[in-house]
Length: 234
Image (cartoon, rainbow, N blue to C red; front, side):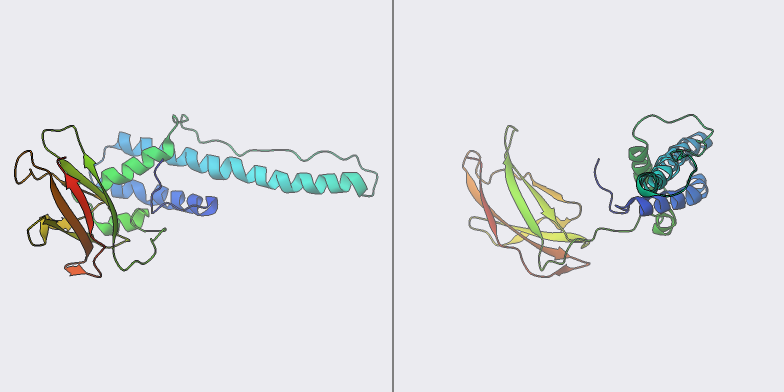
């Protein structure tokens, strides 16, 4: 399962995140037009996740400590009372039917669905806890990227994958063998992928293409990456 940058890595914080999502989701989801049935299914996933992480786990943590104390007293303690082992008692489970596997994955998909629903705003995401970045990437003076040739199609394609290090986008330029540097398409690329699907200048004749990029935050900024060159159409 792909890591979500808004979802904590420790169990205690995951419990807090799920509790916040559980508290805010019904109102936000209803306001965005989700049906009561969809809302109930998501809440059921959250309730059972909380039961697993908090309801089932906390008694086990307590039992581990209790067993340690029990063994110490059993081995070297004093007194005459019989040593009864500590009991394991779980709290009552949610009254709704248990969900199928993948409950957390479904919640992540729901978060993505909400973000693409008309009327969604970042303030709603902050209420739900799905807009934070808990794993910021380290600072970098320039993006990083790698390219590869994609073969097998009617024309050559160059595909690149890049890291923005938290910036809005990258500004990408390309240069042919004899031309000047110019933006590739619109020049601005978000996400982490770009594709250069331009046909060869002379059909059937391979050509070198060069690529470079820098960060884009309302305008190109930062240092240029080293130039990467690839032979296309060979």
